[in-house]
Image 1 (cartoon, rainbow, N blue to C red):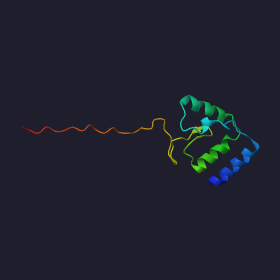
Image 2 (image 1 turned 90 degrees about the horizontal axis):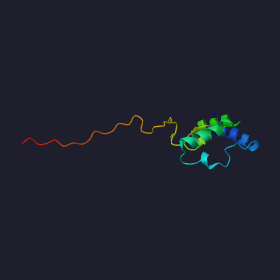
Image 3 (image 1 turned 90 degrees about the vertical axis):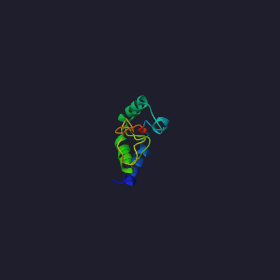
Length: 102
């Protein structure tokens, strides 16, 4: 499904239904705590148009906001989300100087 088609489906549903996330800044905030994410997910779990919301989020590869029970902030275009942003990172070895032989 294209992003345009997914948006058309979601937009049509929004004409008839105001989702419980409407007007809640938390869904568009730059960051959320674990407790806030859980609250958003709980709201999405009760939403009858969450599937349409998810189809649009996936098709358009959104990388911000909270869509269909998933925090998409910081995901990047098509990148999987990890709760540890430095997972797999390697710390550089400390720089040391060799002593010159006397």
